[in-house]
Length: 238
Image (cartoon, rainbow, N blue to C red; front, side):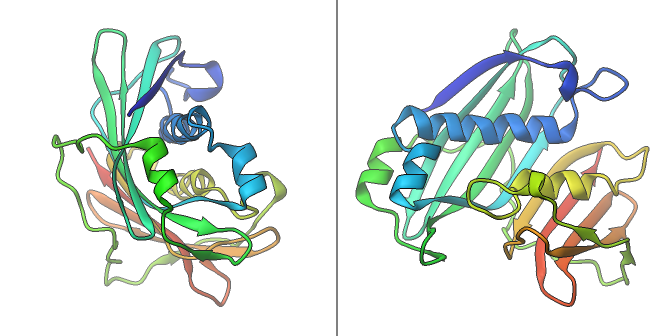
């Protein structure tokens, strides 16, 4: 059973040229998944009382066009598979005439927020969402992102601020993407984004961005200072 919502591209979602930004597109997809959860009675209020919920572990997003200010966009999402501790979800973003701007695959784990560990997806959870066939229009990539062999450029450390924290009390997945995208070359046009989430960063933690630049590929790893990578974002150029 899918969920969708339609909303115009806001001024706060566009770049100076009037085009919708990459983080804004991902934000629409994240919001759509939360709206879907809320529509089946398992949204943020349920997470707080049940103390369980979904945490994303990877994104693969293919960009097929560029929405602009004022355009009415429909964001659609649906579950495709539940297995063990995991669930898979697809997304599409399209214009009023059916123009496809982006499509995505995401993988999530079901999480016990008190024990701070993944747990098996309950039957009532998978039944609440149901499943539909997965997208077949792009090649699914492995979850793991392989870092380039060349030494990275290390950027100035960033301390996690309160605005980066979500209801799960760690850095929201979109914030990592916003951070990583800020290190893209000015003329770099993204056709595909992959993100792998590895470790939770929390309020006050210090993240060290490490950037790898190749001809048509930029990889940004956001690591805890003197610790593991929290997220790795891989951008492929158009």
